[in-house]
Length: 350
Image (cartoon, rainbow, N blue to C red):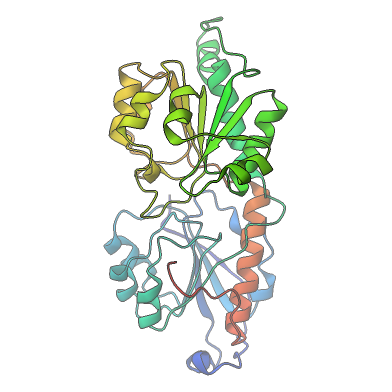
């Protein structure tokens, strides 16, 4: 796979009317890189023609192996556009990119970007909304994973292709308890579908109140009760210092032996060692994971060998509709920066 797949648009530069970009006048195209687009979908999902004559666009279709690798590959670019958090931007990387002027983060969150370091080095950072044609993607994947676990769809599919026939009896979701950890927008969407399935839906988060849970049509339970009584537990918290490792060894140990954990949020929410131990020893029914402490997940990782785990490669947001929305907003952001009036500028890591 090539390091860079160039997709250059336009032939004549239009000098932007912006003091910070005066150095790029005189017919020099801005160099833009679209990062971590493994499937080369960005330029097919959105219209990049507003950048014609103003930017030369390159698609980077592989993950970086290190900060040094990223620094070497990105050294000549003026503008970078991320694909969610696939590439982190710590201070060390920002300091190694003296030509960088603008960083557009697709998605609302920018936890993996050292915004203070960007500010210190004159790099403007913008994010994008998460609304659009792809909204609901994470909720839908979450339910795909829940149903796959309940009915052993992934395992049965694999064994059917190997010539087998019926190896498991699944579980009916109706009447079972769904525990939602984090009842924000995503958690509430997942809860509504659980109610439609006829499940008993309960919720907990560090700041959730009984009133807010009741308003969402679910019951508030404390953390201990949720983990010890739920048949399916689905995580929908943002990752912050206050939530890192919030699903700890004791929480996993409290789960019913038939219960399953679903994580489409962030790997850092869970004590991975404790989860792997419980799965390996059969102390819980299973897990469905879309997020990992290291991404892409290493080929030799133990999770790939556990039979009671359903794995997807961080697909939660990854639909053509959602990518189209992200990159459409990204084009708008980049044009606004070139025009000297950048949109959606973020102020910090809070």
